[in-house]
Length: 324
Ligand code: UT7
Image (cartoon, rainbow, N blue to C red; front, side, top):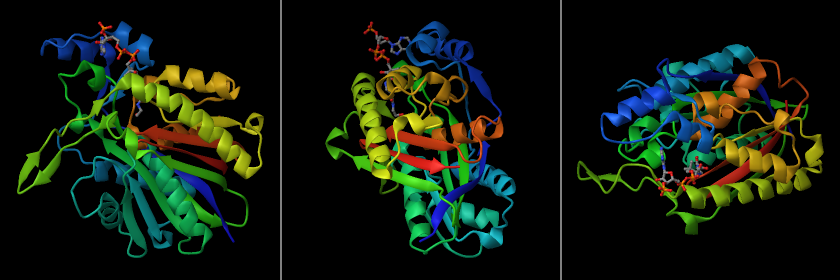
């Protein structure tokens, strides 16, 4: 049975960078009070990239995919699977993955979306890995892409300061050498009310509330414990020790969650990739964006053992262990 190995990464961030101070000034014009001091202290976020109106998830996904394909040295003729993790698809249907396939000029294989909110990339990577392992695909693009700015209520300071837009892609290829060596997914639908965007489109109208709502403290508590347990479980299953992990690439929601995680798992902070200060929380895009940053700046090297982790709405969470 072949392994599935990450052979290239790529990312795209919209060019408009909005600092906390700029955001606070803009929100003040709407009578929404926040500050750089509050955002940095409570979250670690210093800025976010925001897409201009009209920029679609598929557009950013394609740009990150092109970069990943170039990085991996593969052409469109080799790709036989595209999985896009997103909660902000261009359309109800067709899937964003199909739009990406068409735009890239890929003429073969399967394409589908995965909806697991901030855990979406971990779910998508696990699905693609499974298809490669059983021989149903050989070369996959696994993409996390979001325009979360489109589902934020800019009058709700407890959520609108937290998120950003972006896309990240990995190329996953069948290989004789170990690549992904462990994966673990979880969901607890009973926690559906702590993080949701409960709107819908029916009979041509938006029905319900289309904006993201979150009970931040409840999510925080669940996230820390869920990620810590998942890390232990995936390592136990794969037969590796937590101390053998070279890099932890967790979902980028709050630096305090990452600090707790580092303590709970005894993984020093120097081994935790942190990009939320620059990207904020980009939901399904956060893990592939962080992976791409650390791969390109040379921290993550071939042969390193990397644990990627996602957590978010659903409630969903999970971990993937990959030998790079
Ligand atoms: O991506 C999916 C996973 N998401 C997460 O993991 C998010 C997890 N949760 C969190 O990161 C944190 O809970 C938050 C960053 C969302 C909030 O931090 P917190 O320390 O839990 O703050 P809080 O919600 O308890 O709010 C504390 C105070 C409140 O004021 P009072 O009631 O104490 O007077 C809020 O109204 O901070 C106030 N507040 C703000 N103040 C200035 C909330 N948002 C803001 C804001 N600026 N943007």
